[in-house]
Amino acid sequence: MRTVSITVMAILFLGLHFIKAQNIITHEYRRVAPADMEEYIKRETTYWKVFAENEVKKGNLTFWGIFQRIDGMNLDTEPNILIVNAFNNIDKGVEWAGITDLFPNVSMDKMNTWGMSTTVDRIFIDNSTNHIRKPNTDGEDYQYVRFIYHSVNDLSKHLSFEAEKWMPLVERAWVEGKTTMTGWGNGTIILPQSEDFSYNSYSYDIFPSLQAALSPAFSEDLSIPNGFWDPLQGNYNATRNSHLYRVISAVQAPPQ
Image (cartoon, rainbow, N blue to C red; front, side, top):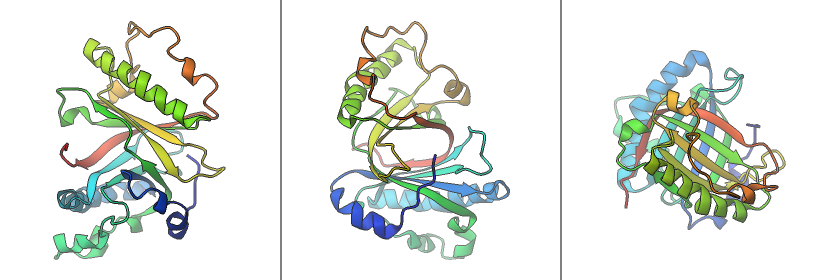
């Protein structure tokens, strides 16, 4: 992924007033030095997961997750941690400093993670599109996630294909036992919008194991209707950006 520099003020002036009523998530990419990774993950799972659980209970967050990238040739120099936050109200957000109320006997320098990492990219997404999970699965099915960024000419056409063709295909593959995926979802990228970041949609595939994530997503004998891929022809204007992540920890609000 190319590095995108966006200041907080630029985000506030250029985008947030357009997305108040939407279900907004942020993808925050961080770079953590390999020597600091163990301590970094320890702090995220010991302190910030508890904070996220509390914010979910209060209704400020609907999802929090931390993911570690495991693929690529440049893991020593590129972002290797992804943090996903889903806000119930993007204007309200959360009061991050409130973590000290949960751990009054722990100094902030012991919980601090931003001092151990560099934030490389921050992406704002309207996440109110499609999200499906394989029926009758539990938390063990959510171990690896492939995040995919799409750059398309006609966003509406792309989203229609995913909702009307791709999602039903995944659901049928579950019924027939012909996919290694245990979940899928998508959304629309709101910010950034620039020449350096041309992606305008994202999707994710969930897998229960690394073996499943590295295997073909669908069985060869899964029938695909004639003309199924036609809506994609000529719509992509760049190569998809796709990376595989290990789920370190995640917190999610109960279904409404």
